[in-house]
Amino acid sequence: MWYPIGVLADLFSRAARGEYPAPDGSFRVVPPGPDALSAVIAFSAHHVIVTDADPDWVASVLPADLSAPLNPPFLTELCAKTGRVVNNIDQVLVADSLDGTPDLDLAPAIDSSHERAVRAYGLRTDVRVWTCPGGMVLIGRGLGGRWEVAAEVDESARVRGLGRALFTAARMLVPPGEPVWAQVAPGNAASARAVLASGYRPVGAEALLLRG
Image (cartoon, rainbow, N blue to C red; front, side):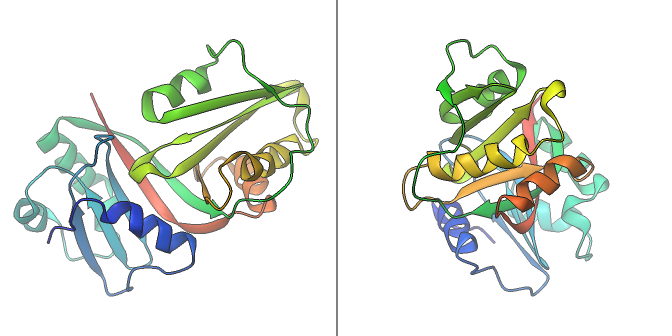
């Protein structure tokens, strides 16, 4: 079954308010939006598959298993069908914006050649990058037009709470009233701890499917 175009942004907006899809074991197919990003998004017992593949084909190859959409066999078939590759399977979290200014010495980045910034420019629009002693934080519009955050802490500045401060700063850097989303690799426990400590709430998981 197709969701109409534009519903993905509404889905994220509702999820940020704690209004999740019904945990009924179903899946829905969403055509890619203007950002042309494809993905598989997992909520509790509900999946959203953002793809230009035919929904009937998706149903024909998707096993009746709650975890199937984010499992390697289906992702491999979907990527082969659409000419994409799996980027990563990430935990997805969200936080509300905060008033005030960050308690960090942030400055707009003059040189945006850092690997994390370059990656952001390839996946997001309206990317804005700030640096501070020992780290950097950026925000940009990603999947479904949502505001997303990424942060980097220099090795010499780790284990001092800077990561938590950067993720908290992002909540003040997005436009007022806009939630901010974070994606964290499940194995990156340090980042997961920093994001959770900054007030972000787990929402689900997702895999972006990128052009090869």
